Image (cartoon, rainbow, N blue to C red; front, top):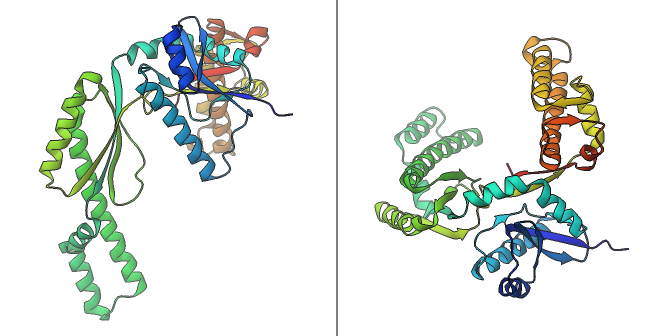
Length: 345
């Protein structure tokens, strides 16, 4: 039998007006409300997402982002994105997620009320020309001349050495440019996140968190940078966007058996607290730190490090669900609320 699923796109302030409900319906989604918060969701034929190939993941990413963009274009601007692929089986689970993360969600909604994200990808306009310029660098010419003076020809190893030096010079050049771009935009940015570069031609792939009223100024600075580099660079701007890079919500389901094992690793009692967890971890870390040179020190250190993070996650999940700082392993409410709601790292 197929298990139907509910896909969560974003979390937003409570939606209860007829007009907004109609807008959601046109976008193929609906709201599940809890107190002052709404989860914007859609029904799926199954509760599982196939990540087995890039095509499936790419399709999901495009669908996820286009749905959110459609919501924003229809007036739902104040939203917190959910991690790509967040899906549950019942409405009750959606409500539980909102309830557990309620204080965190309310805090984020206040923070982002007038904020937006703009993403920038900067590439070389004519990459072969840049490579030729770098190949003419005095250090590279000197290396090449030195090799040829001894062997009169370039061996495969020599070509690799030259290639590595060219790569180093290119990285230095790209890094210098990236820092100049980031420095130019940082005065009007609340936060900046740099993402992985797609290839050597890309200089920066960065996200900027700015106040909505700074967007025009942001674009002016990009125009100034374009003039400064005389068309050598291509600037691609995407935004305004939800704060994907800064405030994406992630739901982590904890395993009770792993929590029990972590408790044993740290020698914790049935009733504990976050401060007790940290104290136990620090004590164990001194014993098992790899620098101690004791047998199996690194393996034991990795175990207690993993146990510590498991217990901290569990502590946070219990505090979110039960609003208590004291963690009782025998507390039924604690064992039933193994859902941690947090900002994706």
